[in-house]
Each structure stands twice: as structure tokens, then as C-alpha cells.
Amino acid sequence: MRFKSKLVLILVFIIMSFSAFAVKSNKKEDVKMPNIVLYDQYGKKHNIEEYKGKVVVINFWATWCGYCVQEMPEFEKVYKEFGSNKKDVIILGVAGPKSKENQNNVDVEKDKVISFLKKKNITYPSLMDETGKSFDDYKVRALPMTYVINKDGYLGFCKWCYHC
Image (cartoon, rainbow, N blue to C red; front, side, top):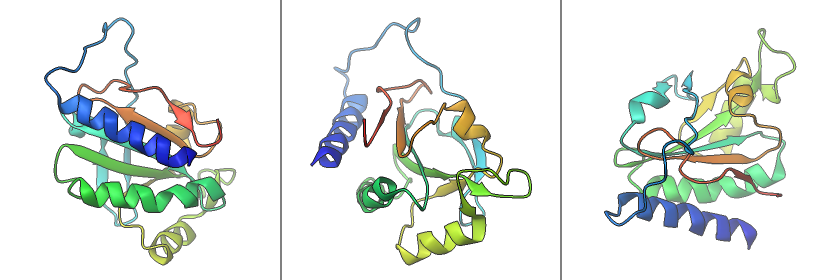
């Protein structure tokens, strides 16, 4: 039930971001989110700054995280319902596969992460952070962790994690 409440909050935020009546907050209080430039499971490069003008939902996850796996089908539904990232809402996952650069990263090797996504029929882009930099930049300390970034590149909602 808690996840569905959070999904409703995401959808409410997305709707509000399109509304002419949405209240603009003071830019001094806004949090500018760090850029992420990574490749997804299909080999496509994503640069978060290129999504300016769109609402971006970023979900940090791992294959071993039960809550992450539980919410993935819901993100998949939202991804498809909002046009598979071809409209004004972008849904992205971020995984932290182990690599030569970072053997202590949060998840299994990249090929296993990609196999996991295929097995679970997850088609929304999941960026492969093999260095752990985006996890550090976004101060991810628990999984799952989801951010909603507004059209101007600022944190558009508060951060939360499933088990908070």
C-alpha cells in the first residue's frame, strides 16, 4: 500500500508540473540536481541535462533489493502510460553494476543486471553506473531511492525511499 501511495504522489507531481496553476518555489530554496551521463542496458547514451523541459523520474535500484524489484513493474506501467519517454515525462532507472573500475559497486556485474532486466520484462531505460559516481552525486545511501526532477532541472519533490 505504501508504494501505491508514493506512485500516486509521483503522478500528482507530474500533473502539477504541467499545470499553469502550479506554484513556483523560490529558486534560492531549490536544489539543482547533478547531471548524469551514462549508457542504458541497450547501449543508448543518456544525458539528464538534455531532458530539460521535461519531468525526469530517476529510480536508483539493485537486483538484490526486494523493494526495488517490487516497484519495477509499477515504474514500467508509468513508463508506458506516459509515452515510453517520448513525451514530457522521462522514467529512468540507475543500477550500479560491479566493474573493473569499481569492484565494490552496489550490484552484480553489468551482464547479469541486463539479464535480470530482460527476465523481469523491464523495458524502461536503466542506466549503468559502473563507477558509482551518480550514486555518490545523488547521495544514495539506501535502496530504492527515487528522485523527481522538474522541468528546470531542480529537485521537484522531496526525495524518499520505499522503506522510510
